[in-house]
Amino acid sequence: SQQGEEDPQALSIQEGENATMNCSYKTSINNLQWYRQNSGRGLVHLILIRSNEREKHSGRLRVTLDTSKKSSSLLITASRAADTASYFCATGDMRFGAGTRLTVKP
Amino acid sequence: DAMVIQNPRYQVTQFGKPVTLSCSQTLNHNVMYWYQQKSSQAPKLLFHYYDKDFNNEADTPDNFQSRRPNTSFCFLDIRSPGLGDAAMYLCATSRDGLVTGEQFFGPGTRLTVL
Image 1 (cartoon, rainbow over the protein chains, first blue to last red):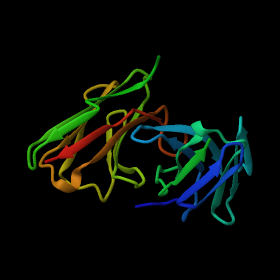
Image 2 (image 1 turned 90 degrees about the vertical axis):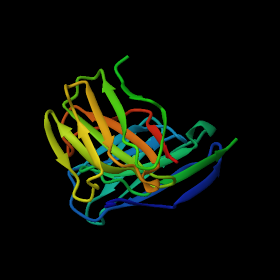
Image 3 (image 1 turned 60 degrees about the vertical axis):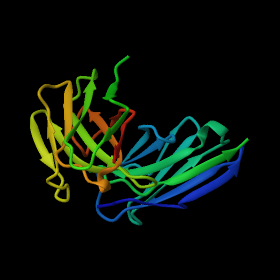
């Protein structure tokens, strides 16, 4: 069964803009992970944030976690056309949300 | 390069004809996972092996079986594929168990059932 739920389901932006995706989950977690999936391919791990962390950065990615609200957000800054993909959050027991389909227009 | 390899990338089978998908890894990870992903949906965990210990998800149909003969290889057997089993099947590995670390995914095998 699904654990994480992402919103929006789809997001379309121009190159250079920032993209924010949100994830909500239902049960207690040890960590939350974000993955990217290019069309028809496997998933690529982006970042893991532990339950005792509130914010984490990796390059142009910024992830926040609010355990009181059972929610996380992924921010991609200065987006590029190559960022076009689906983005999934997954809780520590690997229940994936439905994903956000991001399109970055050149 | 260390990686997760899935063969074949595309598999076509007939309704009811058993099919086996394979996964191998050069990462020497303890845990191997199989996911099913249908079009525009999230990956759904079917089962995983922690070393030789098999862990089945409660809602995984009996039609799906798995084997892990050694650390490097893991197989997904679909005994009698139905049209609803057409999907992308993803194999993944992690060094540790579910609650701790990142997973490394293979490119997937897209299964078509005729």
